[in-house]
Image 1 (cartoon, rainbow, N blue to C red):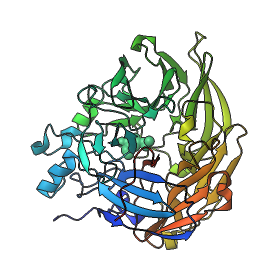
Image 2 (image 1 turned 90 degrees about the horizontal axis):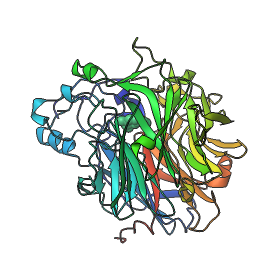
Image 3 (image 1 turned 45 degrees about the vertical axis):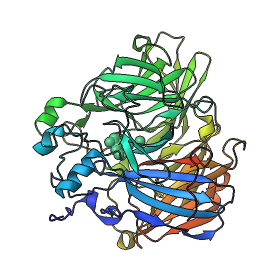
Length: 490
Ligand code: V55
Ligand code: FE
């Protein structure tokens, strides 16, 4: 590499490039890891392998790198490895950045024309014997869950025709069905949406196509036994804009939130479109149904969350000024109207939700998230400036009462998305453990904290010391050893 990384916010502080791959056998643990925790916490995030061709990049443009924390008998081993995408292979061969701006193929070096440009940096999900590394602008990559070797770009053996696939599929806990969708499914800035179900062996069992009301980001979905609900964010795409070298997405304060409710197994023409006032629908906590009523729970933020995708005037709000409500939408499928009703469950700046995966699509009670507690102190002298997304607490929310329990990680630390692992396969809902990475920003390293899920406020029961710095990841999942067996010990 003969060009240095830029000194811009996306490449500074705790989140400067790391680029190291490797393994750490038997991490140091303070406290006690419950012996019944047997499985792997997979996470993925961006870590730009080469300085960006355009001189700078937004925080979503880095090459996907996966971490596996493998738990067995109270011990944890860690592995950290890039998704070996076609894009990363091409750049490694050239030893420089060849791909241009975020989702803008018009800014690429001519030598990479036609090469799949997704960086697979958003989520890692188990399916049909593969660990799928996913980003919504392309198809997933299938990885070996035991070695983190990249197997191949995954289109379900030709069954999945869209050019992209969401990073937020849902797995039906009863059938193992894998339900997802693609937006911009015929290429960047198209309105086309494709909906899919694959069974647990990866066979196509449902496909239907429809048009979104506008070419916009559809980042997450809710899935119930009978419905798929898509949340259309007022971040609109424009092909002409990227052709001119502009940004793919633009925030539109005059555009409603749209929720598309599609009967699973049905046809695109059966979709219902519900509209709510302009705001930013965040990550889906969960969805469930009761007769003709379909419920969707998620944080809704009062303004644009993505400061790097501003509005037409170039304006984006200060992230610290945003207000979040945890909303339960009700879509009444027996009504003719297009307005959902809303119940505000809590007012807390929480995001990156996980629930007990055994309750996906079903009535449930507990959500586990990270949050920004603005009443807590931060020490920039020791921990460095805050740039962009910032969370400082882990929270659990009782969705029946709105009661939250939280744990603040300290004035020189920040959190990453927590996941939930049940105590045992038949434990009651929400009985188990919550774990999440914490960045010790003053020490330039990280910890993995493990909590009793029902007592997050009492602090971690175990702290796994990580002697290196783990850049922010986006999403991850707990996968029990019954789904992906752990590798044999050395
Ligand atoms: C998101 C993340 C992405 C992306 C689009 O969190 C949306 C939302 C990490 O990449 O490309
Ligand atoms: Fe996401």
